[in-house]
Image (cartoon, rainbow, N blue to C red; front, side, top):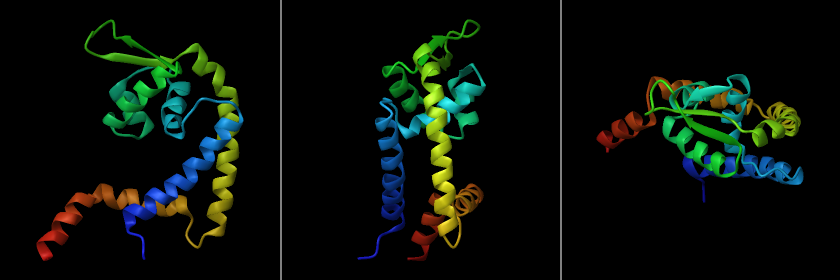
Length: 153
């Protein structure tokens, strides 16, 4: 049976994230691949609001909020109240999160090299194809496409 787009993408992510997660485990890091955009952003910008973090990391605010909560439970980040606006939270790396960065950088470098070797094996590099898909979906959402297809039925 042919896989649908959603099933294919989920399987691809499982294959990629599963391997990356195994590398973290091999280095005795209690860390998930989905933490990476937030960790990279916090390494550059020491203290940031949730909405700014989501924007800088290139993820949705709900995804950022969920990931931040998971990271806080693991002690990787600290969440504090903004002194100017108590409704806003500020996120920063914890001492434990900062200490983990050296090992994470090595893992990220190895992952980047592995991704490059994968791209080299493909007719169209996966990174290029994924960026093209994101750009197309930013122009016209998948929801719009589904609704248009539904009208044609």
